[in-house]
Amino acid sequence: MTRSRHALRTAGAVLLASGMGFALLGAGAATAAPAAPTDSDSGWARVAHLSPDTALVDVQLTALAGGQVIFELAGVGYGAVSEYQQLPAGTYVVSMVPNGAPEGTPPVISESIDVQADRPMTVAALGTNAELETRVYRDDLTLPAPGEARIRVVQASTTADSVDIRTRSGVAVAEGAAFASATDYANVPAGPVELQLSAGGRSSTATLTLPEATVHTLFVLDNADGGLTVTPVFDSAAVGAVPKGGVQTGGGGMRSDRPLVGEDAVVGMLSGAATLGDSARFGR
Image 1 (cartoon, rainbow, N blue to C red):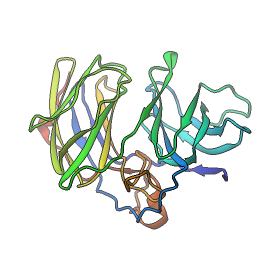
Image 2: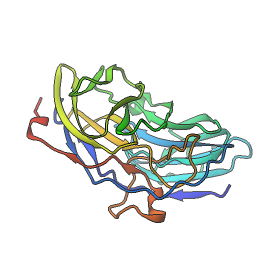
Image 3: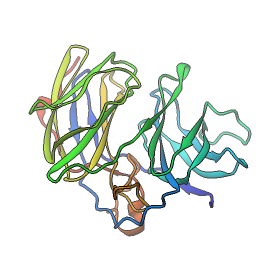
């Protein structure tokens, strides 16, 4: 496999929190090109930088056998989630070093991962810099029924003991989600979905628009004001081979400001249009 280098793009849609309150800012939905046939000997992996006080890092994914660098990402910032990379089944090492560090600099973190055929995964570095750790989350991108979307939560905030997220209709997306946990996927009606979020005795609401037949992950992060930021990542649409079942795989918060069409659609995409209401914010 040839070595590839991926440019980092700025996330265009986040759920912002002031103090412990939440608000939703969004970007329009992107359209993916048709997916290629499945390679049954391949799996998929993406990486996420979820450590709030760890500076920009450069990420490498290396094959354990032979030590070949398969792909690398430069200047990965907090909250960034890469696109999925299709990989032959096998064992790889994901390592992160400070951005621009000289050759041979010890990684701030290094993790061995086993890529399985037909299985996507998310490899995340999370926690404070002093207690940095990695977690591997097995992703399930099975498409929901017509008229529905699927959503889960990865709780990576270092300041919230637990997080609850429900839809206004009462669907529990996260209940007491502890640090570093990933919830099961919940099926919700496609279209505008009002989320009720609570943590540390505070709660608020925000609206996220979920296109039909899509899969999303909400990454709960810290913000500079001591509150929470929830970044919705559009998991289920991108160019490339797909897992069994015809599920389109895609990445998260690295997108350009240009429309994603043709070759550009291979970069990660965010969930669809969202709205912001005054009631979604409050102070400490």
